[in-house]
Image 1 (cartoon, helix red, strand yellow):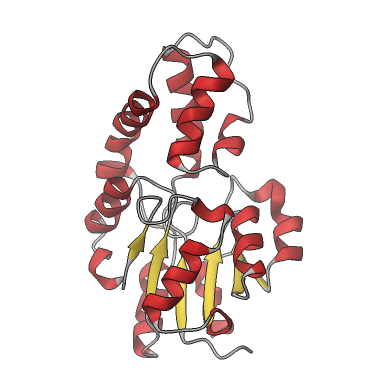
Image 2 (tube, rainbow, N blue to C red; image 1 turned 180 degrees about the horizontal axis):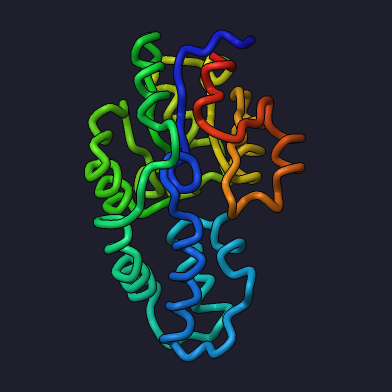
Length: 217
C-alpha cells in the first residue's frame, strides 16, 4: 500500500450524486436555444471541458447567436436550484471524511463545476468547512486535462504527488492525475459506468463506493 498523506476528491459523481442532472441540463439549454434534437452524447463531451471551453463549444458547434458569458450564466441558472436544494451526497461520504480526520490525513476538492454551486452544495450538506480547499476552473482555467489543479491541491496539502490520493469518477481525470505521479482511485458512478474497464486499467485502484477507501489507506 502507498503511504498516503493527503487526499484530493473530485466533486460531481464522486462526492455528490449529480452527473445525471448535467445530462438533462445540457439538453434543456440546447432545446431552449432552438436545437431540436440535441446529441445523445452531449454531456459526455462536456465532461472533459472547463466551463469556459464548454460554453464556447455550444456556440461554435450549434451556431448559437449569443455570447459565451450568456451561456455560462444561463447554464448556471438552470442548474443552480439542483445544487442549492436537491443534490445529495453519495453514500459513505461523511464516514470516509471521519476516517481521514481520525488518521490526521488532510483532504480537499478539485472540481470543474462552477465554484458558487460547489460551495453551495457542500455547505448545504454540512461538509464545506471540513475540506482544506475547493479548487475550480477559477483558480486553474486549464481544467483537469492538465495536472496543474492536482499539483496545486497537493501543494496545499503539503504532500508530493506520490503521497496524494486522487479520487475521480472520470477517465480523463484519472489519466491526467496518474500521468503527474499521483496515486489514483477510480470510483463507480452510473454515468461513467461505460468507461469502467478503461478506468480500471488507468487507475491504481477501482472502488464501487467510497467506503472502500479504508482498504487503500
